[in-house]
Amino acid sequence: MAKERKTSDELNDPKVDTKIASAKEAKKKAYQDAKSRVRDYIKTLSSDDLLKADLVLLVGTGQRASRGPVSSINTVLRDAIIASGDEGLSEMDIFKQFKIGRPEMTTKIRIFVKTPNPDDRVWVNFDESTEIYKVVGLGKDAPEGWDGFVPADENIL
Image (cartoon, rainbow, N blue to C red; front, side, top):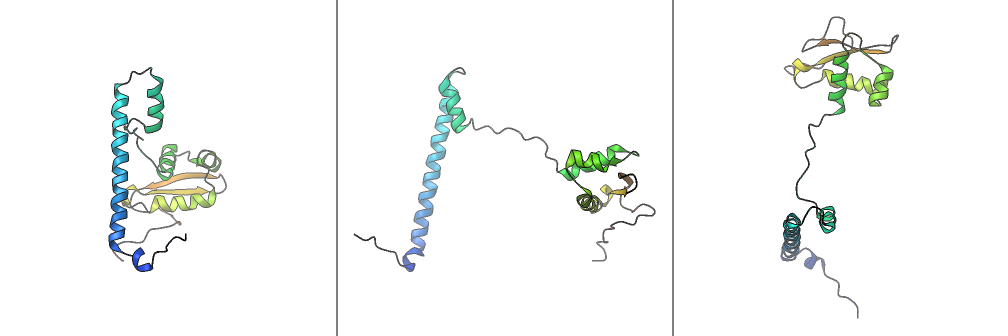
């Protein structure tokens, strides 16, 4: 026998939608309850039990490991350039460590200057003859002779 097709009115019926949603919720709750019972059972097993290792592998222990502090590549690169001091960082060192080339560094320098807190701005200059990136200024105001990107004054906007 052929299966009956539902009309568009039957598919868009809010009662059907709530039934499906409540069924999904019930299934999710049952799964979470079962997982909780298995985790409670794992706590009762001895540490040298092979079943315990298999259960932990399948359902976990319910404890999340700390990821630690998360730093973006911009933060790490900014700190590395500041730490290099007057020597600066060579283009090759930046490429080896961060896999960032000259076009990407142009963008990174703009990001350092556009920092939301103006006091945290880092003004980095690139010397093409020596291929070195150096910090030429820190803080809100652009250093003397700065010819790079300058953020717009928010008060004007």
